[in-house]
Length: 261
Length: 378
Image (tube, rainbow over all chains, first blue to last red; front, side, top):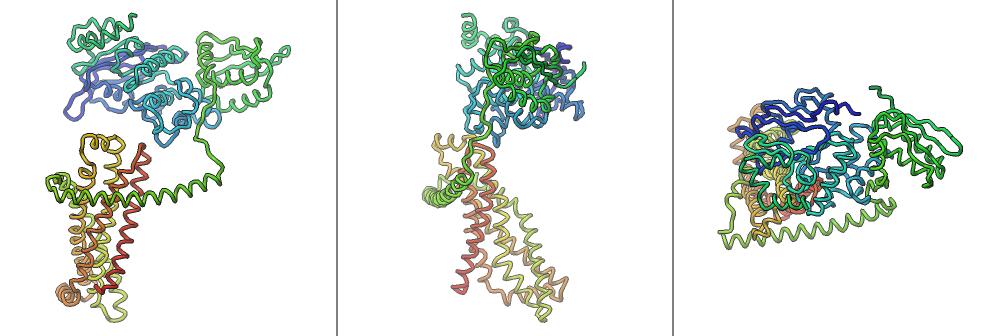
């Protein structure tokens, strides 16, 4: 099996501090993501969920602390080490972030060409496979991103994120903006892919149903650090006003009863 | 861990093909083998096949995909075709892949090249016609909005107008001034060299004066503003269009023509003549300095000759054009911005178009003015 499964934590964040000028987003933030789990990160608006994701994938340099992915500190690594880490993860940005000048299939083929130098028929077959796996119809392959609906863009973005068979996938609000049926299908898709491909998933979300349906563990961001982390049941016990309101509010209860039924 | 690349052997065992695969079947190792595997599948269509995966060390979706593809390409769905020797994780992956083998479209379908070319030509002509009509109606709309705002001055957006006057006008002065100064100097140099042949050095004054006042000052300003602010207008309005800000304005009852277009148009119509004036002054200073340093025309002589021979008409002939140029640049910049749709690519195309069209129209207008002034002896 792959080398990463030897160590338990795929992501290790220690003492993370990020800030924009004087505004501190995170302070003394610790977080572990274990191999093979779906970690859901929740928090109120402006608690820096997306910033945390950006810090982990190397887009926002922390002002203190370390971020290790696959035992590699991305910000200390040289070009070659970075590239090898980048090949092992896939990222789905909030809006899909598809390249607008390429068709969906070409979007999926782009990382194959860049990283693996796979081209021609093999690349086309691989793109078709990924597009089918994320539940898009075959006709979607030749469409440009501007012709797609929001849900299809997310699926196409996921297909691109999965192009290199990553071990770790980052999802930024994967179900935001989808209708409940589409969102439920997306949750199911992620769980399915995780099972069949052995993925580790780091997911930023607002969606309580997604937390119930998909996530193995949940980390709650509040007051600039991880306030609670564990299974959904553990986290729900935490005595913190925001957490209580979040999980025990009307929507939290609705999601819970939906899960129970 | 040894990384031996993907490899396969073929056995025939009692009428059944055995494909014995081994090694690392991950995407990066499949490039070389994919072609041969396809050939094998083509040759073996309709035969029973057993794929023996015992030797596979690593497998990813791409590897599973090519193996499943081979299996389905060969067999006729008889019971005897199967995959053997896969471990649990591998067979789970193989099962997952099985339902997703259908090819997909990569590019939109293309028609016959000749037809496609004819269609493109036709569409180009039609689009040009439509764009011309739309541009005309946009100009009309701008004028109507302008009249409405003049009759109801309360609706004028001063803050925005002043902001654009600063951004598109004031901030452009250093670069335009410098360019104009240099152009004036260059014209003087060229003139001096040739006029000296005729012993007519002193006509450098007229050359610089007339060229800069009538044409260069205002034309140079218009060209730089078209590149600098016309494109900025398109990009600003275009990205607002992409983010649906324009639609948001409409439903809030804010007229985008009034809030976005008119302030920009007014700002340029006020500022371009002012900058053109500064440009003309600096151009003449550039010419005068060259005349003083490279020829025997002192600054005093230059100024005396200038006052004597350059009639005020030259100045007005230049300045009168400035607001027209400004109007064209601003309207085209805003128009192209409003035409942006959807993608970042469209924004890029429109920005390019905006600058090209603005420059083209500025120069066409300039030619018309030149003919007009010639006819009326201005």
